Length: 113
Image 1: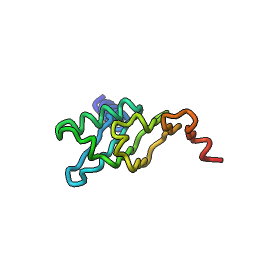
Image 2 (image 1 turned 60 degrees about the vertical axis):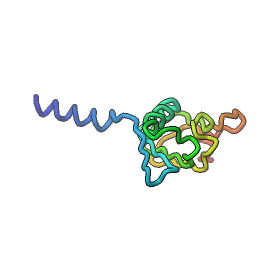
Image 3 (image 1 turned 45 degrees about the vertical axis):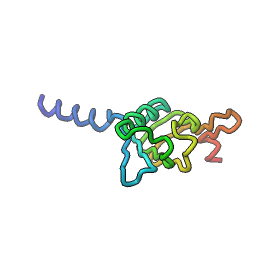
């Protein structure tokens, strides 16, 4: 029974990881977020991470999304769009990348052809 509980707990921890963002004061212009599933989660996680440092909207130029599964990612919903220069996506599944303009939608299937 104990072995069963350990297995279930380890699977839950591995698969049920919470979204998180990391901000390093040494690299002040970047934030990295993981285990994200929606635009709202991304904004919320960034806000929670940056709030102890005050208003940094004018500083963030690089947003990294890693180890995430998102149906859509809408660029203009990112809180730091006015200063955003680079969006890095690593080890993630994002079905559709949107700019916010319906005419500029990029679907994963379009990239394969």
